[in-house]
Length: 137
Image (cartoon, rainbow, N blue to C red):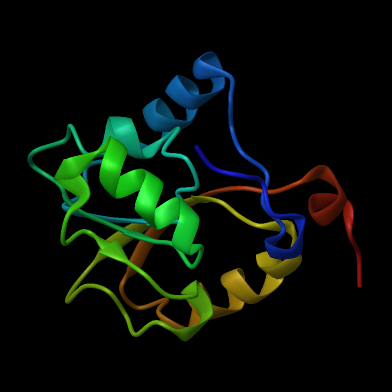
């Protein structure tokens, strides 16, 4: 199985109804390339890999989660970028959509990284912990 790592700010989606709503939100507008940030245990990933018309990639830093995902969803072979999102190069040529259940510790940095790619990122669907969403500077 796998463990939740507070040091990585991990929090996982478990409610299938919420997962389906997020997936429906992502699919409201057409796109051809999708990057999932921090797939964790695959709560959303399992839906995205079924979309044959979409070029899908996921970025995950946690060795344990990468192993779990590859074992559970063999279709993810060659679709996982095993690095920190903050260290990766732009994952696609051209326009793409980003989705993620963003880790608490680096939510702001993730948004700044996405802004570096603003010319190519057509849409972002992100889940944040309440404390991050309410934070003011």
